[in-house]
Length: 87
Image (cartoon, rainbow, N blue to C red; front, side, top):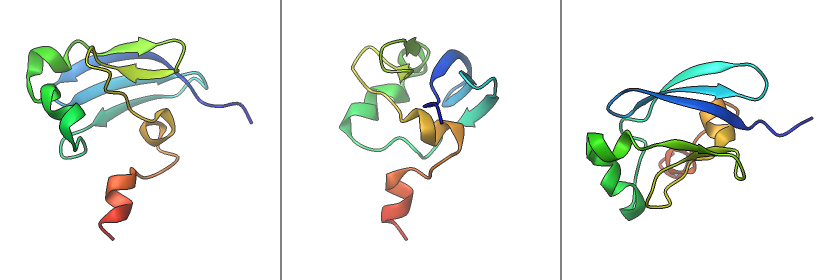
């Protein structure tokens, strides 16, 4: 099985992204309440959040401060670790 990579990203609104994947799937992802920790604090600013881009080398979305997200979680294959830790 090939590793799923992110191929496109579009900002739909604050904390919401439309993400295209290498397997042809497109998902709208709402990250409200999912971004925890100091690296994600700048993303609270809508202007900074809108600076998201696809990193072709990593195959995921990234922001200028180095914040990135697991493409498999965004694809829906796995739950975020932060959610699993609260169980």
